[in-house]
Image 1: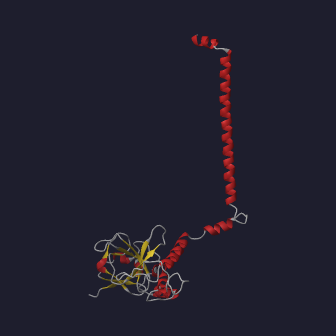
Image 2 (image 1 turned 90 degrees about the horizontal axis):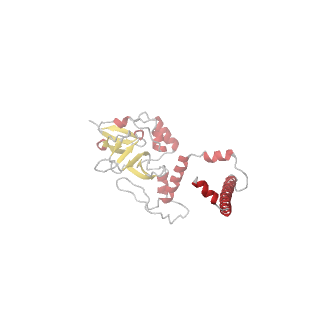
Image 3 (image 1 turned 30 degrees about the vertical axis):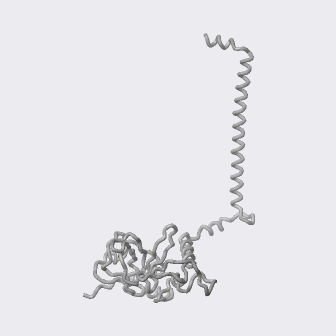
Length: 269
């Protein structure tokens, strides 16, 4: 009853002021809501126009689905390998350093040959890029040599000349325990001694050291964001595998080799 009495005592002017204030507040909310809707509509129109603009090429014609498919069908790995090869050809200088033990061919500077300014690298660097060593054959000759040999792994050509990687645990050399020498399956260059072979648990034949002046190590950027060190036969530049810095003492290096790239020659008793 007290509340009813207070309401009745309110003057007519106070009631009018309260009603006006409430109406103004509701009108403000309605106006703000309309402005937000307009802003969202404008934003949608801008985004839609941008999408339509992106679908139009420089000539003003929309690209066809066929052109888009052609552009996306290129192999990502192929692009990476091509970029790696081009980079290697440009950065290897004419005065690249060769290690006395492993024949490392890492680039030491970016200077070009002063005799021919049109070449990115000298002849020796390009031979390295093309996998041409002291023992060199054409691709067809390599294919025939590695395919017809009775004591050669059927996957040898793909590994040695195309830098493929065999499946882990697929090579009988992984479990080979006899004393002897591991030679290149392509040119029979002695590479590793059984004394440095150990079980790395990776599924590939592994060694912690190579024979003196037997291999060449070059940078491998075929996998983006994962630079590696490729190990090649120094005599024929055939791909053997990769080396990693997680091996046992005394070298701390793990030469992880493809068994298909190797042959085992047992020691004469």
